[in-house]
Image (cartoon, rainbow, N blue to C red; front, side, top):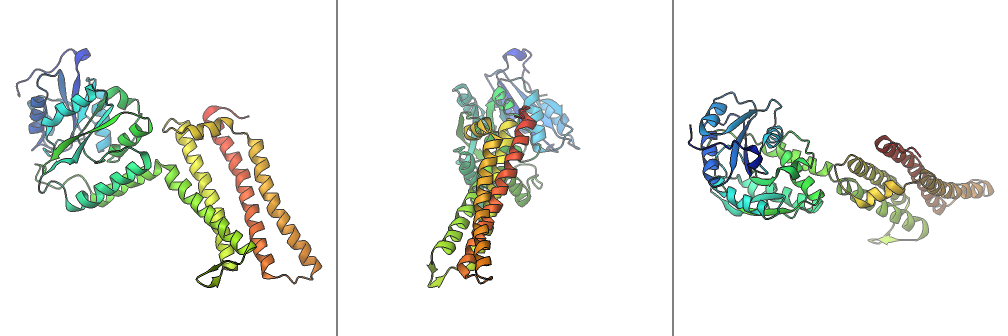
Length: 391
């Protein structure tokens, strides 16, 4: 048994080091001892969250001085969530149990947490990546690209979104209501912290080749896609609203160009085919924007995200006003079609190409107007289902 004193006064525990573990018999004991050494002078504990190991990981961890908890729900995120919930410390530092992270860096995380940070991210790119520690594809493509996407979508302002060593205030993290159980837990933590306006800081850390001597639990393409998918699902603005608005704007411009002017591109006149393309883009764009707003409304109403704009719209939304707006657009399209019908009756069906372009515009306005009408009903139902406000 490693010689150290496990804290008994849980009210004064300042730090808990959480190590998720799955068949890490070769390395977990050394990681526990490194964590204990790094916590010298602190009222701290080491918790190993074992996720169903079938080797001697639990025994090795206990012998080294850790408190071991068994986590039946499988997954990296599930193990970490259980370890955080079981932690007694005011602050938590998490790291992998494979000897890849330098646990002597723990005091740097604690110093930032004491200084007021809510989440302290380790940055391997600002620290040291030892030879063989990170695959080429992860180092120069996967991690930088995913980090940039996360910063773009959520404004986290970090340099290493997938560093497995990070520290945080236990109370602040539990207040985020994190839900994922897999590898995407790492992204969810940062996303929710950024959305809630928590103070995020970084400290340089180092990464070494892990000491397990076997294949990593990480699967490059599968887990990379899972992180990207999760980020997109948590960002309705970029997933729905931005492409939807671009499509609708381009579609409306194409229809207007064909219906009301003779626009040439590369010497060719934009004709009926482009009007039809514009109609399609407009209808799709409006619907996608509506879906994005509904998705964001779900997040806001369920407490999974913040948006003052969406909350104001939902709070001040009146079904009747939206219905009037939608019907006005629909009737405008219907009026165009009615005028075309009248002209057709007067000319014995002999209509020129310009009238066809107006017909496309009129039909599109009818479609968009009905989309607004039924979207208004849906938003009313969505709001009522969460707030009980039916009128």
